[in-house]
Image (cartoon, rainbow, N blue to C red; front, side, top):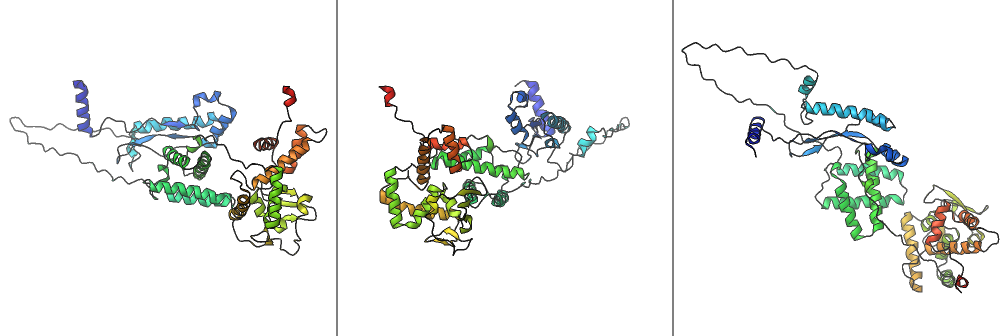
Amino acid sequence: MSSILSFILQVHDSVHDFTMKPNYNEPKIYTGGVEIDQWSKLTKKEQKDALSKHWYVYYSFRDPETGYLKQQQRIKGSANGFSTRSARLKILKTIQRQLWNVLEAGYNPYLQDNSHVKKKLMGELQPIEKTKPISVKKNTKPEPIEIVKEVVAVAPQKKEKPIMTLEEAKKLVLDTKQKVLNTTSFPQYRSRINRFYKWLYENDFKESDDIKTINKKTVIQYLNIVLQNTSPRNRNNTRNDLNSFIETLIDNDVLQENFISRLKKLKSTPKRNKSYNSELLKDIKDYMDKNDPLLSLFVDFVSYGFLRPIEVCRIKIGDLNLKDKKMQIQAKNKLVKEKIIPNILFDKLPDLSDFSPEDDLFTTNQIGGQWEASEVNKRDFFSKRFKKVKDHFGLNVDYGLYSFRHTTISELYRELSKEPNMSPHAVKSKLMLITGHSSMSALESYLRDIDAQMPEDFSHLLT
């Protein structure tokens, strides 16, 4: 080190009592996670996504307790009230420039009084009066001057209060989600959030910690553990729920940025139940008709009503309009949808006239009655009940209640394809009305997944 630099450092440290590290960094503008100079190269969707997020000015200042730069409160002004890039930048660049000026003038967010900065910037500093020279008589020895070190009173730094603790954030989100999620989705969501919190507390986090202590690195570590212990699909579902957790905090102005949304989903191949062949299907139905008629009718609603097992569990007696042969179903993707009751299913229904419209169609031991249980528990009850049938026929995990739905739809597709003057599009259009798929692409994807579309024998093309 050169002698002049060594001298500067020694004098600087001894006089000012702090190192030459900057106490703050240059204020920057967050623009929705995109490079603003690449704006013209972004797609309309990417621009729209960026503008849907909060834009703000951010900076860091050195924490007097830790000695490290710590990000301070973000400044948004009125920028997010505008829907264009130029309007937001006009406001935020002004804030950025003025913030830089006050930092240069000595603003310190950890001091309670920064009035000296205002005086400096507004020219209110009073000129320093010149001291009068001390007259000293000749031939007299000057009196010794006592040197007193100036004592500067520094207000004790208060520990910054968390904007919201981990437990407060969890309560806020779960209370909100309980109002918007259905009775099937919310328990799963709550369970994943609770498992995440359990992991946090097992890894040195505390209930009183600021919610801002949760960062991208923390979530990545947890998702990796979920992946190692379970599957890519469960890891992706956990990511989705944590993403929703952060989004809810942003909506409530607790956090400003969702770092989880930038975490990629892993490739996951969902498992689907296999379809039954015609011989096995007949054997299973005969067995259930003889040994468990209640389960057999439950399966008929899955097969011929094209319902999910949990949708069958939701059916009340009042949902069945037997006069018009229609039923109302609370589906996964809609509040309520109406479906026909085909004759093949209608003919198997018993007399329901003695039951209340509020009675469940299916209970544990009969058709019609009250069954006090959650939808998930009802579905699991019939899944376990069908497990006994699977064990009887030696079927593995590839077969389940969904297999009946797949089998019926595959059979319908092939039979419709045999009708004269029916184009492939016409076949799918007619099938879509029956199955209740929301779009042609969804039906086509489903048919591919269950291998319903099979080619004709092509042997003659090779001879």
